[in-house]
Length: 97
Length: 375
Image (cartoon, rainbow over all chains, first blue to last red; front, side, top):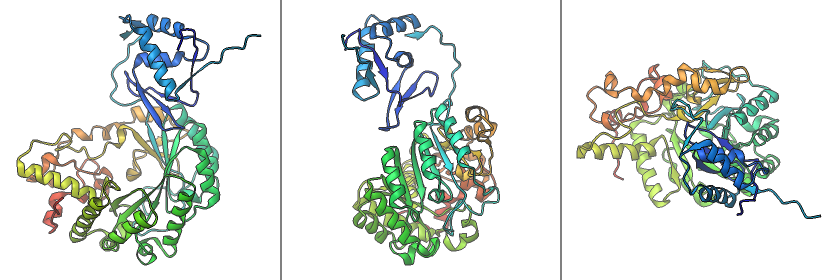
């Protein structure tokens, strides 16, 4: 995945903010569910196919205190794992004319 | 990392229920003699329109409910069932259905299969043959149930079976198991027993398990669950009791410390993640507590009822009530290992919800002459 990639949250997936600190992503098509923390919730809400990975990481840095230096990799891995399990796709790049 | 804007009080209750049990109809083509649903004086047997349910399913979608269980009555009696299921699917939920199986045909099975959102359809089977199954469920119901199972299996719909054990089928458990697991090739099934609820309250002396029946069922179910390993499940009834009571007896004999869920009314955790709706639209904590009206769908906000209703929040505090405060439990050596069991049965048997249920009381079973089989 490149920092210019624009992830898109699968529109069928439901974000359940269950308790104060945790949420669940639920895919009703597969019955798959993933628990995510507040950073994951913020990342999820940013994945609209218009923001690239770099912009999402920047947003996380703005939203949270004490962000570790490894945040780029952590967010990239998080989105990559969600993509592997069908929770996330990537916006298609426009064809060169 | 901490969120800069975070300023939320800790709330031990999840924001909305994960699951909702929906009594989608009060109509049924059968009148089973131990049915928990009918003959409940607290219930208004009246159905809502298609539009009212669809509006409610939209609210469930907004509440991010994950799954809905359709029950009744008999859900397949509703002609608009495909439309209602479509409403569940459109609102990003999955569904299960509890049924007697007799109204299932290829058309509705095909429709359900193509949704790809069905977790399971549970069919009630109480005997290995019409002569036993139909005793409580009525003539022709065995053929209807087994035909329904075969149709569901043909369409690759996840199919489960619930066997309700009562006085007349307790000696048929081996044959039932062979029918379900060998002949119909189901992956497994669940068992419980008839309880003192609804129609069963009128037939309880005839149908409910005696201590000897319960012991007979326990012995046979333990044998069968060992032979067909992993293919039996039970959260109540003789098999669940045999497993739980054996752990309690062993713990008592060894002087083991209190179980994590022991000594208090912890027998039901449903109010932490689940809620129910009656066919007439009343929101209730559970189908076994149908008299506790918490609100009305499409009139009261489900989220507000879930978070703020005092009855529901009272049920959530049941686990703080110690069993040693009840005369019923006085002198019982198993208190530290007991959960007090189902509040629904506690209510119908004692008139109190915040009370242990006599139905699954280990001491009472022993006092009635029951003996716990080895496991």
